[in-house]
Amino acid sequence: MSKKLFVAGGASAAFVIASMAALPFGPRIAFEPEGHSGRGDNKSVAELAAEIKADHQRAVDSVKSIAEEALGKAKSGEEVTNSLKEKADEALIRMNGLTEQVAELEQKMARGGRGGEERAKSLGEQFVDSDGFKAFQDASFSKSARGADMKVKATLTSLTTDAAGSVGDGVAPTRLPGVLPLPQRRLTVRDLISTGQMDGNSLEYVKETGFTNSAAPVAEGALKPGSDIKLDLVTTSAKVIAHWMKASKQVLSDIAQLRSIIDQRLLYGLSYVEETQILNGDGTGQNLHGIIPQATAYSAAFTPTDGTAIDTIRLAALQASLAEYPATGIVMHPTDWARVELTKDAGGNYIIGNPQGNLSPTLWGLPVVATQAIAADKVLVGAFQLGAQLFDRWDARIETGYVDDDFIRNLVTILAEERVALAVYRPEAFIYADLGYST
Image 1 (cartoon, one colour):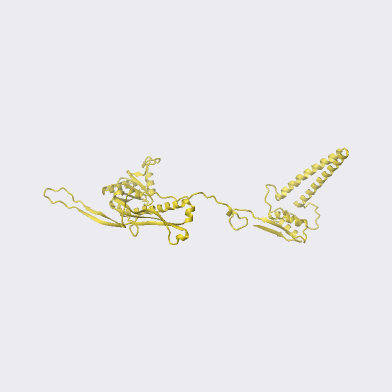
Image 2 (cartoon, helix red, strand yellow):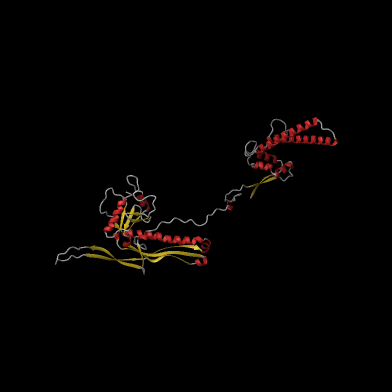
């Protein structure tokens, strides 16, 4: 898209050109006022240039005249005199000097009369140098001339707006192949507990809730003591964990990697919620009854001197062992596990392992699961395999189908779901404690 600058013909043309020449963004072009003879000291750059060009042209003509005279004499057999040679040398020297002056003056005029690097011509300069204006000037600005116009083309830029010269929409971006997935949290709590299969919707098990041990040595013929046991029937049901995504058949066909990403993300979402439910589910509605809400509160068998969080974990394991359920694992927040690993002795040496080592996290001989599913500054220690069990009614799976008008819209519904139940057999097998970092 181009813009046009138009100057009407007639007597006002000289005024318009003079006004444009006076603008601050270009060199000043002085037009001779009426009655000015062109002589005197007050001469503009344009007038000086015209005079120098005229002198240069006269010098060229002089050289031509001398050359023609010498050529004529040579043809007629006459000898070229020394005076003619001197005239030729003087004319050539003058012509060359004027040629240099003309070239230097033209460069200065192109730079606005100043030295330095050349700059872009202003709008007024472009108009004065345009073919349209020159033709109008040659016609002596007569009223019969139609005037002068100049097409000004816009500068091309990378803009994307609706403006002349905006070509940004034509620039193609660089697209890297594939899809960069989001990070996934490590899930390992399921690996600590026993798993199994179940039939039907509900799960029932009998749990021992009390035991009075009255066993004692008995003399011959004496009455033997009796012990008591208390049992409770616990009923829980399988809970469904599910979510879905909808995608078009076209995008699944066009992006080969997308289907696997959807499947992976949907299954990961199930595991993410499952781990949180195993630890923290409150048992209401469709929530599992998790381990932590049923765990036994920490109660140390003794108070160690200058106790630390590492001591607390060891005493929690002792509490589970005293309940006849030796601990098999530890669950804690990654931040707390980092604090434990960074614990140093008085000499500045790390107590837990070697920073250059790559052994699995363990503490007091027990595997450590660091997960954000447990709150910071808390620890769960217990006999996970004996104290709880996770039952799969439906294994985690992906299903695809049409919902409502998906078929006529070329849409596909991708569903991920599982159905699980959690049984916590012995709350005494799990000890839930504060590590004391926040106090």
